[in-house]
Image (cartoon, rainbow, N blue to C red; front, side, top):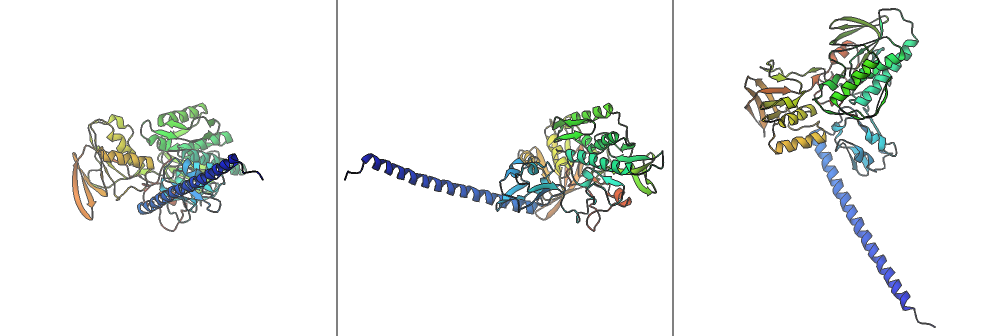
Length: 465
């Protein structure tokens, strides 16, 4: 019988040693991965608690609706979301963390490999701030449809899609009905923002006779953006024009594009005209405007949610130094400025003003913490405060405005005191009064049983794709 081969023995020892090392290595990797997962899990849970404490866990309008039975916890939605902190993985499934930060990009819906996410409004039966609409955007009043941010979906891309689809639905209905009057428009489109603009283009494509009115100008809410603000449109397809190749525009570029398209297709838009009331009649509606009445067989309300800027109702507010919109921060220097509001518009204005030479910027907000900010804005704002660029007073309310000062009531640790600060300009960016009264007067029903909210301070507007 021959002796064992020494080479084979050495190889066997080497293999067994390598296998043992591999087991140790894999065990270490496993323990490291479990530690990482544990730390990440703890971080997510802490973020969930923070969101609940701040109230940012509750979605305002559009938000991801997750089917937990389908979700496989791959986190592709978390990585795809441009607004940090909206989603997280909790106990192996996706969960909405900061729901109020969602502005409806729907990237999460696009990347989910198992179609477990839909971005929408969910059940709005209890939402007293949203009108009840059917699948074709028709309100509780037959013949009146709503498209765009007034219905709760705040993106330009979605507004364009809704305006287009609503007009297609009108065209189908109207083709089946006889026309009884030659002085009646087929459709009155109220609002010339993205939804109204797309609807006007679609109406021309359908051969409908329409009137499009706006109390301001083509572009709607977009015109209220600060100068040179980057606007994310997403993938847009406009009737008569087709697909727009770009997804990012400066405010001025997007308005210029809309104006070029309107001119090319000879759209008739009447600006400086405000809708005051709607009344149904036998063959349609009579719309009372600031310059007379318009008859139409159908009505498309493509209004924004901001409506009339919210006033504070304090002494001195009517003076010229009080403004409700910031267009061009770069033209304002060497001023003592108070910004009032706690939404993205107020914070963005404060940041822009603080960057200009010599400005001293203070922000006043009536709550103890910001609850509706985009993560990027919140981070930039915190950094500006930390570096002394912006003074923030929370919670505080403006009591009076004088020629060279503002008096505020500030609460700190349960103690309320009056604070007087030197001041040259006041920007009140606290949202607006949505046109709820107009809608209710027309008979349009809202979700819930209460009255609509008084203001749209916390509603994000159509600023993204």
